[in-house]
Image (cartoon, rainbow, N blue to C red):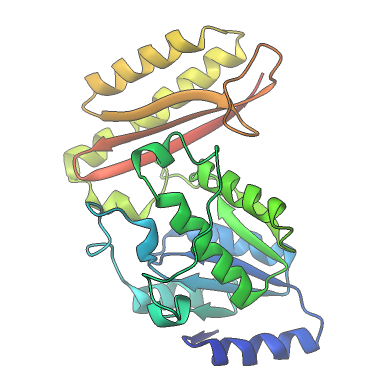
Length: 282
């Protein structure tokens, strides 16, 4: 496995692979990798002969009061982790490579409607940054497929929308959420939790799972389930940003005929913003 940082280095390696008609999968990350990322790399290997992992902490998807400056940059650690995985290449560009005209003059891609609620409402401009940087990665790597995690459920839907609408020749594949033994979804931001908060954090998944079980048993009063869940999380010490039951396909409000739902939530616990979801077939 090799690490490249410039477009020229990347182009040279990709050209060599394409000469041999090898399929290329991209796993976009912001680094600070954990077992959840490793699972996406392994999934990518099932679809492609070569796997590129990008590591880039993207400034345009962070708000003014968010943790861009503090977000861990751990390239040496990430490289060691990926040497044990199915990755073939790490693409670790700098800001100038990703935004050659500068951040102020950078082209932005806006996906309407699906970005307006949930994480889009609480983090204005976040998804513009996500779609813009993912489009840039797609243009640089030109992968046959790209792998995203289900934990960021709204994000993978937004990227699917963008790719379909722009006719991008990239297959979007979603990998299941990887969890700690107690159910907490793996996330780079879990390290912000202190010991007491870490012990309490799995309550989020427990509440989500409880709602999923109620839905599978035929409960249809979604507003009541949502309200009770917000109270349960608040009583457990969470500051709830949203908790909602929506159509899995597009995050719209479901009707009684909808047979695939997603229960999704975001909540703050101490300094950590936790997001999670459970997909339910009813």
